[in-house]
Length: 246
Image 1 (cartoon, rainbow, N blue to C red):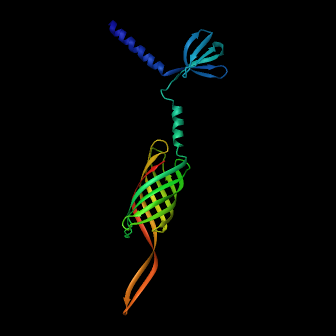
Image 2 (image 1 turned 90 degrees about the horizontal axis):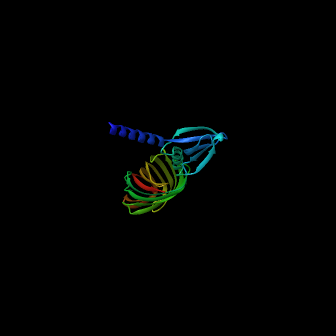
Image 3 (image 1 turned 120 degrees about the horizontal axis):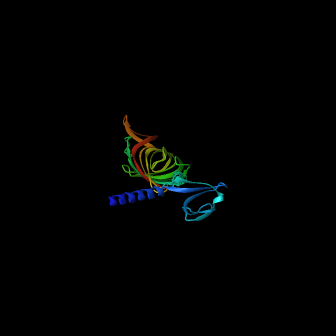
């Protein structure tokens, strides 16, 4: 019976101690100041000695004290957490760059499948909107030709989470073996990494004007004829783009 009482007393003491750890003493002074900490020494009707969370010792005269209370103390600093979350939501603002690689499969029957490498740089106005410009290198695998699109880029993140859906539009003009209007539309997912960095995966639709000259030779009435004319082909493709954002 005595051992049981000792055990109950010990458990009660531990419970009381743990509960006490969840509270902090708050001293309100008559001048409006508030001191939070642990009262480590008290001289009745004379003074208090308080140890604050940063280790400082503060002595107060009792005639300056308005009241003393206890408040629940959290194991985490929620105000700091809120501030940190707000800061994290603002980290995307400023300069931003992208490096991407894509494979575009031709859907326009012109044998215009290609590999595209691109880099884009610009300004992120907040966590949602980006405007910039970039340059790409397109290698058409079926025709063994190269184009260099130069474009403007607009991008929108739909939410502000670690995993974020987004859409972007690129519009410009290509030089090189293929010249003409260039456009690309992508929808995908942004996977946030540390700081401003992220990985991006997107499904893209790609359009490219191809200005070419068509030569046509034929025989008519015993005569050999040759005609030529300028024609603009619309090269279209769908593919996947993978990229790194910094």
